[in-house]
Length: 174
Image 1 (tube, rainbow, N blue to C red):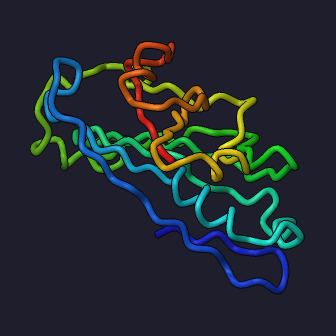
Image 2 (image 1 turned 120 degrees about the vertical axis):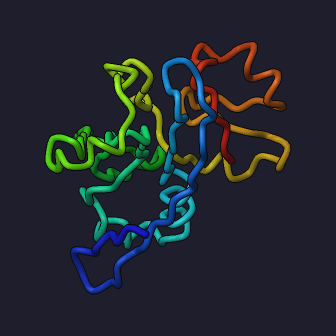
C-alpha cells in the first residue's frame, strides 16, 4: 500500500497495487513482476468529490513498478493533476534501483550476465495527453475495456489487439 497524503483536513488515501507476473522470455530469463497502481488511482480518486481533489493536487504517486528479479527495479511516477477531462499524471519521473550497486554481496544470488542489459527498451510509458480516468468510461457497459496505454475503448480484447499500436505492451483495464 502507498499512502497519498492530503494537503488539507482530509485523511490520506491509500493506493493498492495489482501485481502481475510476466513469464520468462529471452530478454527476461526469470520473467518479471509488474505492480500497477493505475486501477487504484482511478478507483480511489473517482470517488472523491470534485471540490476535495484540490487537497491531492500535485501529490506524487507511483504508476507502475517493474521488478526484473535480478536486483533491478524501475518505477514510473508522477504528480496528480485534476481537470474537467479527468485525472492526469504530470511531471513524470522514473526511479531506478540496482540492489547490486548498493549491496554487492547480493551478486552471489544473481545469475550473470544480467539480461536485458537495458530494461528501458521494454517499458512503454503512459501517454501524456490522455487522462487516467474519464466520466464516460464509467458509464460504458461492463463488456467494454480501455487500454491504459492508448486510452481507446473497445468491445473485446481481440478487437483491441488488432487496432492498438501498442500490441506488445497490451493491457486492458476498466
